[in-house]
Length: 91
Image: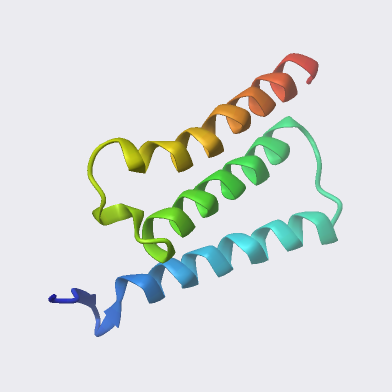
């Protein structure tokens, strides 16, 4: 198995760094009390993207083909999409 690297850093490390940046952004949003529909949807999108990244890279679902890749995606994006619609309708 050949592990691809960018600048000598493995993909899983890049994913971890991206997730840490999203977590820091979410923390700063809460720390500074930012609000509004756009901010709420951004935080929700961060959570959904991070969940998908965990499934793909750390649970190994990226290499799986077919049906077994879909339950995690549906579990994330169906409720996340409904929450996003609810935020939009209320806001």
